[in-house]
Length: 243
Image 1: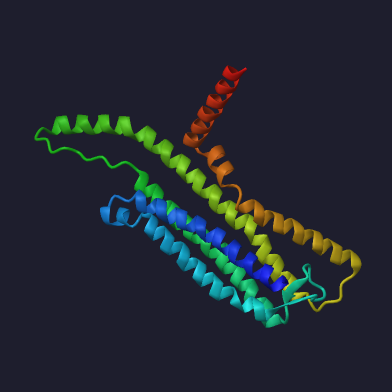
Image 2: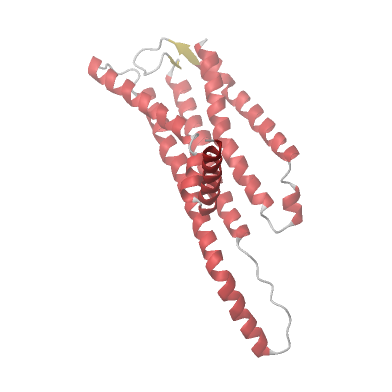
């Protein structure tokens, strides 16, 4: 049973991280100025993406049924790698596919989305140079401030999202590598208790990573905060009317 649980847990964690990547890719596609790229932002493409990553991670973590065993000594969990090669292989898989690569993709596609979201100013062809200069000045005055505010908000949301995924998930990969390298080391009861507590905290950080999207967008995005306040006020007013 421990192998089945670990297999489902590994696939679920990887799917959660790469679902965020898929959402970032979809934002890039639907905000692109090219109609060809926007045409890829469909439910059909999303379903194919989810089926593809699910199939990939099921095949990738199928080795769990061979590499992991129950009641392995000197490790923080009951179900762990049977030998050092299996542990190192799974640790590097966890660091690469759950932490590093998703963070890179989030940063890349988030940056591209911010670039797509910047408004494009198309200047008309005017024969008079003075009129063209005046028009450019007016356009810059009208569009520069909102554009900078939007860029600043999107950049802040992107940086916080990438930092949360990378910083909160990285301790899990590092601790797994540490546990694998020290599995054959004799440990005292106190050290074992400290490592078990550390592992529990690290697992909580991983769970926290994949449950912060709503709070992240609400706290860092002006539009999300305004929408949330409007919904809150509407519910509050409706409650007062009922009383």
